[in-house]
Figure 1 (cartoon, rainbow, N blue to C red):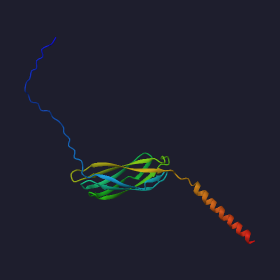
Figure 2 (cartoon, helix red, strand yellow):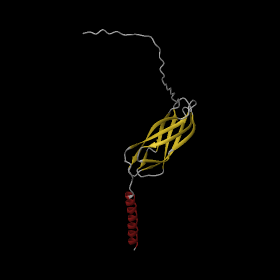
Figure 3 (tube, rainbow, N blue to C red):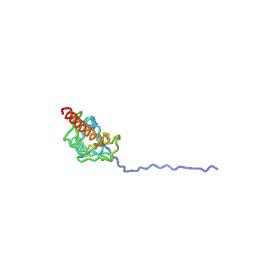
Figure 4 (spheres, helix red, strand yellow):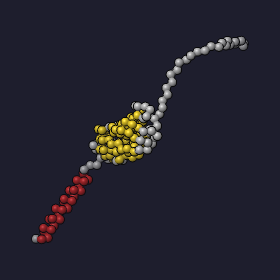
Length: 168
């Protein structure tokens, strides 16, 4: 059986409200050029880490504050580095003070997320992020150095004793 289907068409108009969000991305963009030092020792404290950045965009970043958000195992005592303005193609150096946990995994590359908060000529409160990496090295024990020191002292004492016996 085939039922007869009829459509009724009627012209009408309707207004539907929509919310449209337009977001303009900043023309200031950042790139990490260098991290110094490339590695830190597990358990070390008060390490100064320098991160060189460059504004590779086409707009000036004003009131730039770079905040460091490291992976667990690395702790930041000075976590922000302010820069008044960074022109296009201009480089700057960020300084951070880090402590490394004694439980940090040697040989692992730890992520250091750099969060940039800045304004440009059109908007305030802009953010951008870049990643840097830092390798953790094995915590050295003082035993090998102490053993070398003791060996040198014993050798010196032996030489002195042999010289005294040869004079007598």
